[in-house]
Length: 272
Image 1 (cartoon, rainbow, N blue to C red):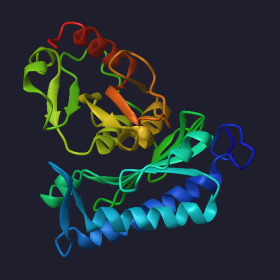
Image 2: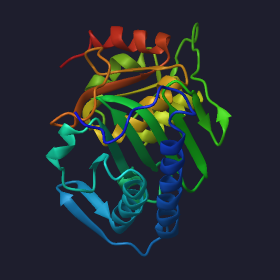
Image 3: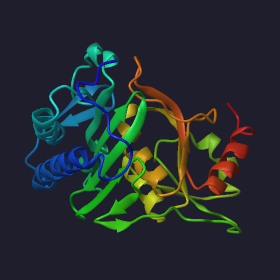
Image 4: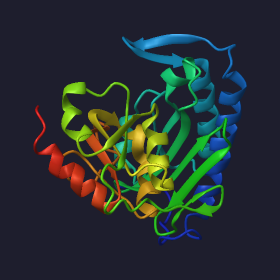
């Protein structure tokens, strides 16, 4: 696959241009979202139960303008744009959710964020997550560690903790949570991208979803969790791969090595 430019080695200096552009794009999108948070935006349904607002669309446009201007040869995959299959022929693809947690945004629940990831040859190498109301900028590049507003992040180490804190969405199937509740303290939260950021920060020990997730929901967060010392895997225990023809992951688990091992063991005992 053609990337349009030579690929740098890993580390913060190597991915500095991409990181600066992604951070700028995230902040510009965040300013738009924050400005519309209390109202003045339109809402429609893309499909049943899947809303989109003018905040999603305006933020998406702002991000694309910044990244396309700096990296015009890179491919693009976003929740708010029609998929262009030509991305499959590119090495580098920006994977973007301009407003992850749209339902929370509409309900004025501050559990949403901007999520910008970059994958190269199927592997996520850069992630930026921005919570505009709290001015929290989470950022990571492969081999360079993860940071929140410039301060290093590290996942929690819940060894010996009776009931580690596990973040879940509010829409998870309840019948599959009963077994998990025996060993984890479950806490609902909106955006999965923001849940991943909290795991990287050590505010929670792990997160999981039984539902299928789109690549744009988790690309950025996976880089941030892994660079904070955590591990991510799909429901069958594999490492996520990106820029696939159908950009969907089957379940996701993210947390420390210890938390993930406990969750993976429990998953084998859960009902279908």
